[in-house]
Amino acid sequence: MSSYFVCFACCLPVRGHTRSILCDVQQGTFLFIPNVLVDILEMSRERTVDDIKAHYGHEHDARIDEYLAFLVEKNQGFFTQTPQRFPPLDLDWRNPRLVTNCLVDFDTASTHDLVDLNQQLSQLACESLELRFFHPLSLETLTQHLDAFRDSTLRSISVVVGHHPSLQLEALEVLLVLHKRVKHLTIHSCPERDEHHHIDLSTDLIYTTEAVTSEACCGNVSSQLFRCNILSFTEARSFNSCLNRKVGIDTRGRIKNCPSMRRSFGDTRSTRLASVVGHEDFQRAWKTTKDQVLVCQDCEFRYICQDCRAYLQDPEQPLSKPARCRYNPYEARWE
Ligand code: SF4
Image: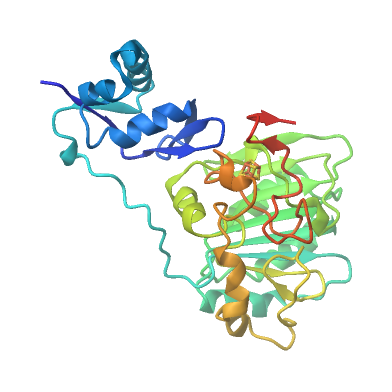
């Protein structure tokens, strides 16, 4: 009896213009596959392998066998007589929180009230926060800032801070033990140091010579930033992969979708976050998917790549591709 071929439920094909990928959202990896193999996989739930071969004509049998053997070898799928026993994953993205992440920028003139911010984010049940300091901070000042988040709903905090002589490895290891919510600490503008330390299984400390001196340092797109997991994959299918459920506060305390964007929805000194994030206008940016963005909609990486709506290739076209992406999906080439 002829078999069916079924991909594991966590192995999800994404068709691009020139080639496709098969994302394994459980292993966090992806394989390049030809577009015709996506056609075959789409057929394979309804048709046996023999039926698929008949559809393409038997002169292609060897090629189809080769493709399916490749997927078996890569642990992406299997042959079965009972495909109905292996239903596909539900790819809807749901989250009960109105806000999942917040990005706050600081320069030397910023006067953010972090105790109040923590209370507001906790009322919104926000999960993650990034604090981005464009200037150096001493260990003492950094500790004071983090003390504002000792009692919080936040599960993770990322800190990006300018190099200061007091930010030495031993002292920061102690700080990270005391502030377990801090999962990523990046010291930028280091004079001569590029180091990556894993403090424990979930905490990273990075020293880099790269400078992060303004919000304009954001918006980079590279294969190293791809995220191939079920949460980000499903979110990117239905929402914006950078802005969804995000609130940004720029260096002057203006509430925005992202600190790099122009439009402000109020000032943190006079406007509560809750009154902004529930607003239809504010939520509009959450809903721009990569399937709507020009060029990205033809790219095989569109569900694992982070979007940027602040820096656009054509600033007059809101659905333009991110300015800092150098991938050309029509030629399958990074420029
Ligand atoms: S073209 Fe779009 S989806 Fe593809 S890598 Fe660039 S930004 Fe990401």
